[in-house]
Length: 228
Image 1 (cartoon, helix red, strand yellow):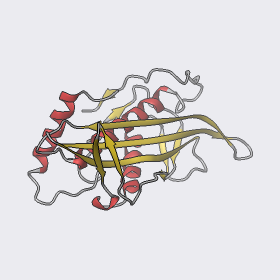
Image 2 (cartoon, helix red, strand yellow):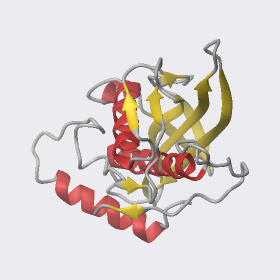
Image 3 (cartoon, rainbow, N blue to C red):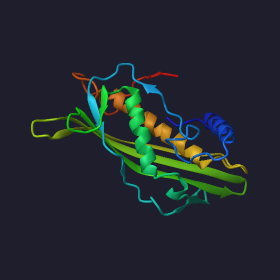
Image 4 (cartoon, helix red, strand yellow):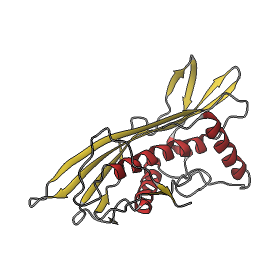
């Protein structure tokens, strides 16, 4: 579900206040907690299967070049990856791996796929930030889209069946203001929404539990408790 405008505004203001306390904030989602707040998602029934999370594949078409588009008749100037401290796919990979491990959805996150019972293959489809200049002020834009393929245990020949494949998308646009919100922060908020829905889906599909049936593709994500 999308974040409501009041909640998004409050979160952006809180991050902005924190960012003001540092003279040289690091533009790295995985290293700067002021940009990305970990979900602290924790499944109610930890899984008993091991998992290998493959390195995130970068399938974006706008990795290096700035793009131009239009929203509501106003041009959008998209940013280039160079504004970040390190490659975007590297930050996303680190965050996703940490989130899956901390969620305890799986019994253990293995470093190699050979002995893993479940294989998660993530793909970064879109990750971009930008600005919209209007007569009433500027808007910040962030869009994150990821896809995962989840494969089951390997058979005697080493082949794995595809259990499910699903995409997750989040797009946020702030209200017009003469003090435009941080696009770094907005990217973190959007990525967090995508990761949270991904964790909920992995949990609800029961792929991490031996002997559990697979629910329908349209099943509602299971509730989670918070470690906060």
